[in-house]
Amino acid sequence: MAKDRIESKYFCVSPGIELHYLEKGEGRPLVFIPGLTFSGEIFKAQLEYFSGNYRVIAIDPRGQGLSAKTVDGNDYMTHGRDLASLIDGLGLDGAVLVGWSTGNLEVWSYIRQFGKEKLRGAVTIDMSPLPLSADPTWWTEGTMEELSEVATQYLTSPEDSRAFFSDYATGVMIQHEMEPAELEYLLDISGRTPYWVCKALFCDAIFSNFLETAREVGAGMPSLMFIAEHWADVARPFVEQQLSGYEIQVMGGHLMFYEYPERWNGLLEEFLNRLP
Image (cartoon, rainbow, N blue to C red):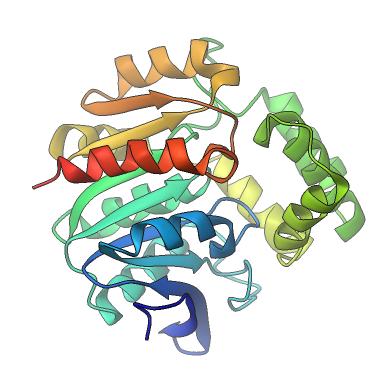
């Protein structure tokens, strides 16, 4: 039974397209959505912790982890529709969506297309709804030149993609000095996503604009944004000025919930306990 252990399952979101997800627990649904190239496995600490009171689901988005790899649909509007199919098919009314990194875009994409009626709250982890902007004071993923270099010079082969994520993991995701085995574990999770899927999703993410949807979320439902410490001086003022209504928590690096699970889980639990 899912209440006793983490179960590995599949759900067909459209003809021939199966999403893999992990599930544990019973109660109101709590749905975790990972970032670029990662799978629901990265949320194991959250699956174990929250499954005592919630039906916890951690998905592998299309193209990632053990989910279907397709030549089309590697974009965040499609991912939002996949998420809607999963929510409807599994009967996840009253869910709280928790997105990490580009998983935020899936949360906002779902809400843009399908509204907030089936949700109790939205939690987003460390990514702006407007990843690219000419305004240097806004919270973005980098300059056009930097992001263009990633897309055209790094995400072009399995080896170069793995090297990029190795640098990103050690420089941005994790604050402590990782042993080689831990780094390889994270890179192996990431490496289950083909580099060509990664490139398509990366480019779509960079040119996404969910700012108005994110504003509507903050104005219309309980919302929480976690921000990593390394860019809090830019990200926090952006959220405060542009996303009125969001609660803000600043901690750790980009992969804060993995690196500091006890503290992060506690902060999320406090937010969940305040929901109606």
